[in-house]
Image (cartoon, rainbow, N blue to C red; front, side):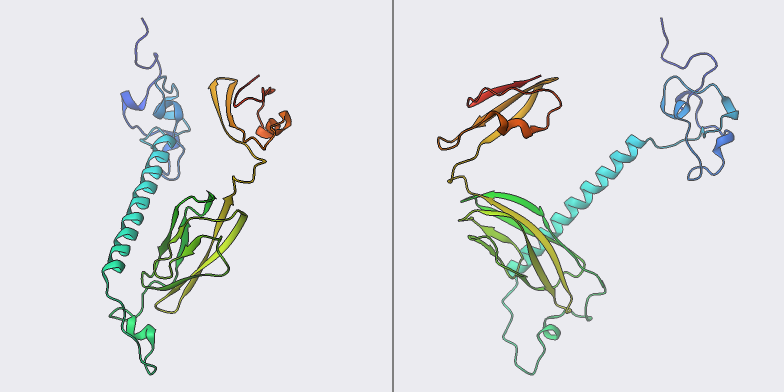
Length: 263
């Protein structure tokens, strides 16, 4: 019966613990971990003479997991801060009219002068959206740096039916006309006079004109795919319409609302 530990003459980090080897010089940043000793059950049979490090190291999988967790924490923190900012803006009273001999930026600035942050990072989440005519949407901005915004503006014209809130920067509404892929430039002006711009890609699909199909493809078993297609009466689906699916195996299409594609 095979045991769970390493074979005779082999040692592992889990059994022997961290030990210095010939490759441990410069640990932890200047060395290379011994994969067999640190991360496998088989272990390493070179002992202290191994040119790779036998000290404790973090595996690449653990590093990726920690990086992903950190990214998720930062994302949640950003969204909570943005939601809090919207609540404060909703509760704040409207600014009083400013006389001509006063500068608006000076009167509305926070106590203690302008922001100490010199740079502004401005984007939208998501930054690339595909909408259909009549689809209700709401796209919110994400802002890093100075939090005192003055106003948002679009350097162009948004698709018909979509509007930009000059105070919050939120783009909302229901598209009323089709629009091909286009980059719309949105600009934000800060209380300290800084400005930042970002590009938002928007496409509006008009399903009322026909000449299209809507489908979903999934791999039900290895090498076997199922394609479910909705075909309007005006549109004619031809076999060559599905040749752009870029599958490695050969495809066949039956031309029905539900079809099978297999190798």
